[in-house]
Image (tube, rainbow, N blue to C red):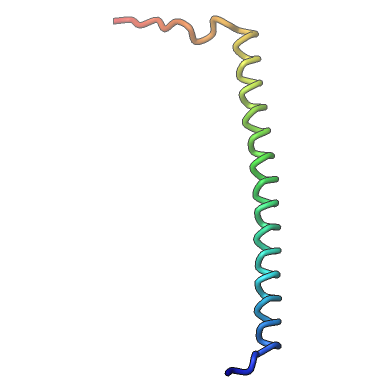
Length: 66
C-alpha cells in the first residue's frame, strides 16, 4: 500500500482552485466586454434607424445616365 502524498494533493487542489478562479474571472471579463460591444451595436443600429427616419428617401433611387 502506498503512502498518500498529502502535501502534493494539497498543492494540486490549490492549483486546481486557482485555475478555476482565474477561468471564472476571465469569463466574467469576457461577458462584460461582450455586453459593452452589444450595447455599441444596438446604439449604431438605433442611430442608423434615426438617420433614415429623418431622410426617408435618401438612397432610395439611383439615376443612371447611359
